Image 1: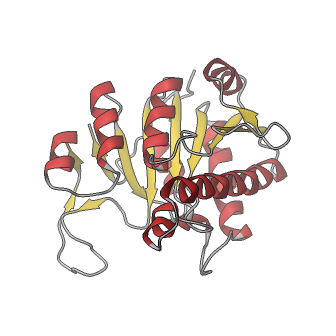
Image 2: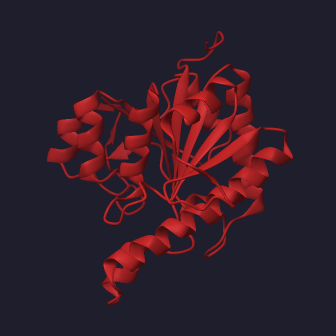
Length: 239
């Protein structure tokens, strides 16, 4: 049960692999992991159950590999393994500040992570453990955005919190178009019709069919994970 000050009981935080790089060109920044861990600890202290899905683009991007001529299935499996590396880095960062954490993988690797079992994941969350879902859905041709939507629905999360580089969804790239318009709210259909690409179409459609709200917010602004978990109107809400 969420305590006062919390807008949700159970959330799924979607992090890109690139979000973990910090100022580096690739890899994982311990400073970024430490900051994310600290904010998630504050969220857990509110009584909110936290699950995380992390991408792997800071290590290997399957689509880019396929574009260079690699077999798409092989490239996607390599991307899944990259997400496991990121999940283990996050787990280490979380447990350094005494956040009990479990990594659950869509690919079987029992020496590294637990297999994803829905009821076990929910039990971990009920016990106050942070659960990190790695290896996407365990299938090629599906993005980690789709994995985030799927896992959020499976565990009965209240919302998907999608962390990005900007403070919401715009009608154009705000990094390139200074007067781009930011949306406070959008419907699933508007996201699809306008091809806003904040998440892939499969993920948006899955959320629409299961009425799973999404909040898109800026990750690299101190305190934003806590603010969005409190429902303080940070970012753009899709629903």
